[in-house]
Every structure is written in structure tokens, then in C-alpha cells.
Length: 183
Image (tube, rainbow, N blue to C red):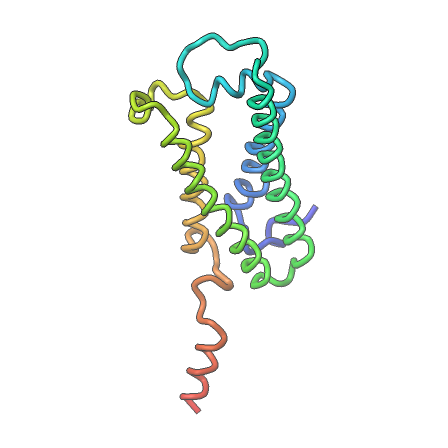
């Protein structure tokens, strides 16, 4: 198993979060929607309202949509897990390339975070939007935890708690222009 130092673009807590915690937290909903507690539970937990959870969903379209949503969660978790590990393993001595690939991935994920937070919040009934105490674990996962992930992606781009190798560095074109002027 590669050492943490083999992944300079994703050190310390970032590595723990984005290589382990986030993939697990995105794969788990797929399992929950497909197997246990199941699609009916998953569907009813999206908006906490205290109604009893039916044994099964009566609408085949809704069941299919929940299963497909589970597939999206699984895909997201596998991409984070497999691609980030491939970056680490294939480019252990190239932190610039690591950071460029991670940055491209984090840009896509950050944009998805923003829309996920937005649509999850907009979809809540008005009486729940500002009543965080009534939110269930699903609502906090879809909004609160995703806000945390977005914040950590922004912190990564800002170079907080890590060395930056590409983002925040002068581009090679501007570096060449400065060297040419100095000559």
C-alpha cells in the first residue's frame, strides 16, 4: 500500500476524506436504496415528514428512479475511489500531474455539490427549509455533509493545509515571459 507521502496532491486529512470517507458515504446510499432498508425507505427519507414508511413503492417509475439514483451514488463513489487511487499509484513522483487531475475532478465535484445542495434545499417544503432540527440524517447528508465536502474542496484549491504544485502557481507561459523580460 502506498504511503501518504506518495500522494502529495492529496495529503493528510484530504486523503482520508476524499479517498476513504467520501467514497464510502456515496456508495452506502446505493446499497441502502437497492437492498436494505430499500427503495421505499429511501424515497420516504428524502423529505422528513414523519409519515409511516410503506413496505414497498406502489409506483414502478418511482422505484426505478430510486434505483437509478442509487446507481448514480455508486458511480460517484467508485469514480472517487478508483480514479483517485489510480492517480496516486500511476503518478507517485509527479505531484503537478496529480494535482491537475485531482483539480479537474474536484472542479466537477464542486459544481455537482452546488447543484446537489441547491436542489435538495429547494425541494424541501417551506416549513422544513430553515428548521434544521427537524431534518433527518438523509437531509443532513444531502445538504449539511455536502456543504462540508464543498468547503473542503474549496480549502484544497486554496492550498489550506497542503503544498500546492499546480493550482495557485504561476503558469509556465507567465513564467517564460518573466524570464524573457529579465534577459
